[in-house]
Length: 171
Image 1 (cartoon, rainbow, N blue to C red):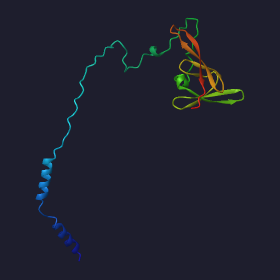
Image 2: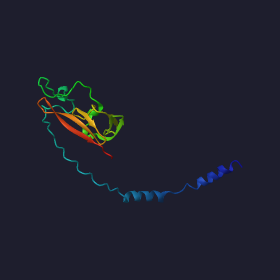
Image 3: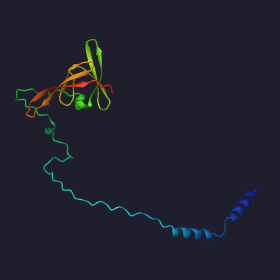
């Protein structure tokens, strides 16, 4: 009885052995009749040489020299100058166009503005705080706007004042 399954299995497998000539002929004729049609590759673009003619200019892969990035201040002249020794705040790295007034907070007579940056961070600012690229100082805060006084370089070593504002946005 123990050998019955083994005997049945041998009989079944024995029936699988047979002539495969017709199968081999079908595979050979299919391979001969069906040739793969691969479209030709596109012509590669012509290479044009570029001659770099800016040898006298600063390499774009080298950071600029420190004197090129410092603000020019002529302390020998008696004119309006920013305080460059003052430590800059985080909001002085953003242009005013990239800042949005989102609201106000108040406690008694003191009012603060809520300003959002392009990376969705919100800061609380009061009168006298700095923001913007041009030494902007907050002069006044109302419920709908922030008045800012900026110092703009005139190119000759002096600076001029410019009044700007941020309006409340409800986006």
